[in-house]
Structures are given as C-alpha cells and as structure tokens.
Length: 105
Length: 89
Image (tube, rainbow over all chains, first blue to last red; front, side, top):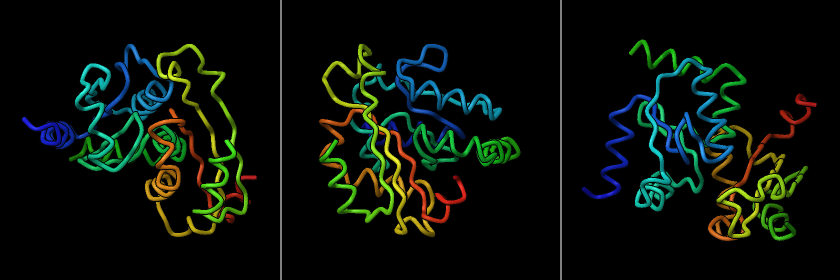
C-alpha cells in the first residue's frame, strides 16, 4: 500500500492517534512524551504510531498534513497540532472536551 | 538564530519576538546529533488575529520552511495576538 494511503488509514481508523518518536511507554523525544502525556491526562484512549520504526511514515507524514514536525496528533481524522498546541488545548480544557466528544460518538 | 529572527520579522511583522536557543538542554539525544538546533519562539503579531492555533503555527513553520529540514530540529512555538499577549502578562 502507498505510504499516503497507510497514513490515511491510520488517521481515519483511529478516533485519536498520535504519530510520535517512540511509544507512550518509552518515548524517545521530550516533545512526543509531553504530547502523549497530555492525551493521557485528558482521559483519551489513543492509538500511536512510532515513526522511528517506520521510516516511510517518518519521511512522508510531514507532507500528509503540511506539518513539518513530530509529534502529530489527529482527532477524528483532523490534525489538531503538535506538542505545543496539544499542551495548550489541554491547559485550556479544550482537549478534554474533544476527547469527551470522541467517547460519546 | 539571527536568520530565524530575520525570517520571522519579514514574514509575520511581529510586535514582539523572542527567540531562545534551547539546543544545549537536548544535547546528547539522538535528534540533536546532527547539530540541528532546538529553538523556542514567542511571536506576537496582529496577523494571528482571527486564526486558530493550527493556522498560526503553520504561518511560523512556513516562514522558516527552508530551515525546518536542516538547521532547525525542533521548534517550540507560542503565537499570540497583541491582545492575547497583554492579557497573558
């Protein structure tokens, strides 16, 4: 399968997914770690893709949503942002609302 | 860092611009090996008015796009309008 198709499938088949360096249990980058923690703290159940284990996704994900860095968090198929935005949304309480909306759906 | 400043000044007409080189904190981890830097930027610009976080961060990334694959390894962004900046203080 084409890499863009694979990314699309990940994004669309998981209500919440984070593309990160490492895993939520063993993050390999501080930004990825903080974003995953914010999702957890917001009560999210989420899928993750370790981009360090998938060089093809690592290289092509920035093109997918025109976003140059990792991590990337997608909710209901939409990019919500990287580490800074995820943390900002968590601090403002917005992330918790988005997570709750996903759970109700 | 001067190049980051020049690019952001030209693209976003910020009224406040702070750039911090955070590279040392990350020295030693894999991503820092190539010598690319970690930077924190605070950009306060009227151009962010009426725009969501995603759009604002994209504007910053776009302004620095030539550096995103080389000199800049990681960028932490705060993008505020002048009004938001004053209420944050």
